[in-house]
Amino acid sequence: MPASADPDAALMLRVKRGDTQAFAGLVDKYKQPVANFICRTLRDETEAEDLAQNVFLQVYKSAHRYRVSAKFSTWLFTIARNLCLNEIRRRSRHPVESLDASHTEHEDQPPRQFEDQTTSSPPDALLHGELEQKIEQASAALPESQRTAILLCRQEDLSYEEIAEVLGCSLSATKSLIHRGRETLKQKLKPYLRSGAWKGATK
Amino acid sequence: MNNDAHYNQLRETSWRRKLTEAEQAALRAHLAAHPETQADWEAEAGLNETLSRLKDAPVSSNFTARVLQSVEREAAARARRPLAGWGWWWRGLSWAPKAATVVFVVGLSLLAYHRQRVATRVELAKSLIAVTDVRSLPTNPQILQDFEAIRRLTQTPPADEELIALLQ
Image 1 (tube, rainbow over the protein chains, first blue to last red):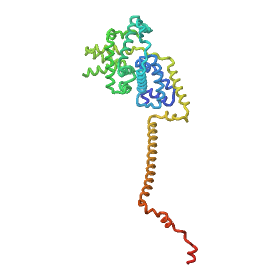
Image 2 (tube, helix red, strand yellow):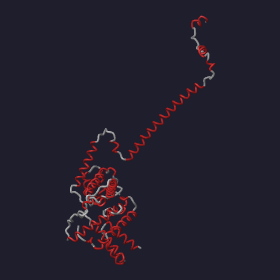
Image 3 (cartoon, helix red, strand yellow):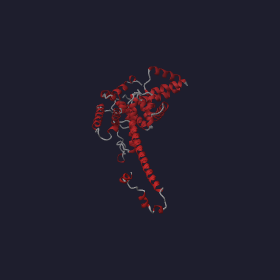
Image 4 (cartoon, rainbow over the protein chains, first blue to last red):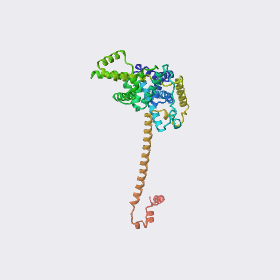
């Protein structure tokens, strides 16, 4: 793929030559999508930003190995996914108890809730907040490959072929992962999708 | 079947992005012709919309600055590593030169070991030759009884040059 077809690849070639301004441009463009991806994969807002910074640090350190054979975003999300997988493995070896998990001495108290700052009427806000929580829970329960496939699908500049490259599987397998993941989500969220709760409060 | 394939294609496109006007028109036409797919499409659209409305993860306003600081720290740490120290060159290599270096060192070691073994065998062979020579000596000890006398007989005295001159 020529660098001219992918403006990010052209920036990355400048980063290879030590251009930190070009690197800052790439970080600015992709910090939110990468943070979203990591946050949804790990379900941890605190760690997501730290890990996102590590992703870009890894991008910079690996700049000398970058080849314009694939889109920059494909390479970037491959690094992000690998770091997430490392973190998941690390956590499975050293499980950490969540501060939000209920403890025996506080079982009578409701779980912590965060106020939704969006401007909407209280019932809509509650429903919307509940739907978000439900979809977070439902996607967290998916197998990692299905969850990652669905999250990458939301990156509009990634084609199905590029998503397959990040996942390391075939195009048909990728679409199958997305389809199965979505079917599971639709099943779990059926009451909310039927009620039209997703048409509720604005962002 | 063609219609199903077309509908599936539109469905898969909607997973990644919003449909264009033309695609939406094609979808409406399909739903009008196949009302049994309406419920399926509404579920898909609902999920698409829900996923798109998920809140962004929080990202600090100084995120990029912090990444650049990390990069500068990394570069400074790399520059501080002593060039004469053992291993600095190793860390800078990618996997192929590292593998080649390992193969080279192992090969040299094997060659040195092989040559050492060959040299040892040569020494052993020389020792064997000496032993073989000893073994060729007569085994009867009586032959060696007058060894000293016989040995002196074989020692010829130096020529008497004065006597030779007189005889001439």
